Image (cartoon, rainbow, N blue to C red; front, side, top):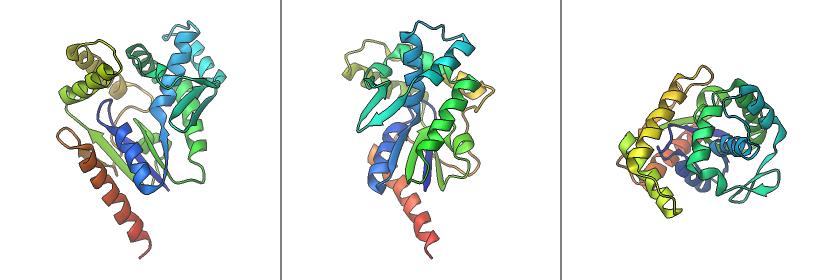
Length: 220
């Protein structure tokens, strides 16, 4: 059984997906981390992020694994290293490349084979798992998304202004929505939830209630 949660950066989809997976007893698939892993490897190898062929080659060279709460690239723990603004920016650029997306979509589908999973990203309900059992699309006001991201970075000791983050969000949204391959958009059968003024528990309650209602309907 597959549940997808899509949405733009800062909408709360990663936190919601983790929490929902815990409540349901499902596995959690952090697809955003996978793109960040490729971006981190591109930076480490001093590859030009705008060299599509070279980036595609990197995506096929590295091994990405999840162990408990850790993210590994070729057995190196990159859990914290992939959350920097630099990696975030590069990840947004390379996510446009068909070869990168093709490789990571393959890995995502393999990871979801014969398991109950909550998968979050930007194209999970539209491209990766179009036949998913239940689909959600989270949105939030850009200013609120910037505030959340600023809070996260401050906790990590990183200095950046809210205005700088807001500008990055606008740029990333534009790239994600206008790219030719798997643009960011809600699936036709996805339930849209605006998280701007909702607590995480309120979001999780709504997600869990929807999924359990559908599970119950199957058994009738």
